[in-house]
Amino acid sequence: MLRKGKYKILIIFILCSVGAHTQTLKINTVPEGLQKAYLDGKDTVPVVNLREIFIYPPVKFKNKREQARYSKLVRDVKRTLPYAKMVYETLIETYEYMETLPDEKSRQAHLKRMEKELFQEYKPQLKKLTFSQGKLLIKLIDRECNQSSYNLLKAYLGSFRAGFWNIFAGMFGASLKSEYDPKGKDAMTERVVVLVENGLI
Image 1 (cartoon, rainbow, N blue to C red):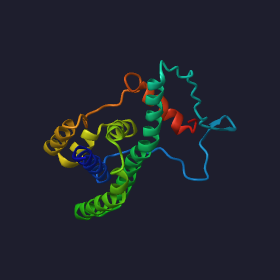
Image 2 (image 1 turned 45 degrees about the vertical axis):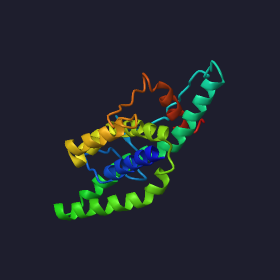
Image 3 (image 1 turned 90 degrees about the vertical axis):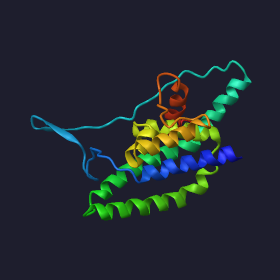
């Protein structure tokens, strides 16, 4: 029980720290109501992004144990993927809002307030995550943000404290430096994530 409790505290700490982290992001968006297009002579040609279609061969299970493991992965992805996406959205929103603040003092005040609010809002939910779901969340944060939880903590807290939290995670078999490998060891997870994102499972 102590092991799970300490691990969940670590996950909550990562999410709250990410909420207070800012970075430079370039966002390519079109104002609402407008359509991307280009001129071809006198013709205006709209630019339409078609939805990707993913087709996977059926999963063949060797036994019921392997099938149960796959079902558990689907359940865990559905549980943790929204949190990983929330981290990414928070990074963007925080950056955009921070750009409107007049000075460093007001920025720091905003970061502290946001950290407190995130902790209060998500702590009850994250405490319900299992150990394996916590490890998966660390991987999915890397997938969504294109950088590991360790790098996010390092940018916000500095190398020493990020290293401390990584050692702490290591005591429970996890690593904040875990990188997502969609074409290798995380290929099955990537398949499940894509299917979940497209509402296919």
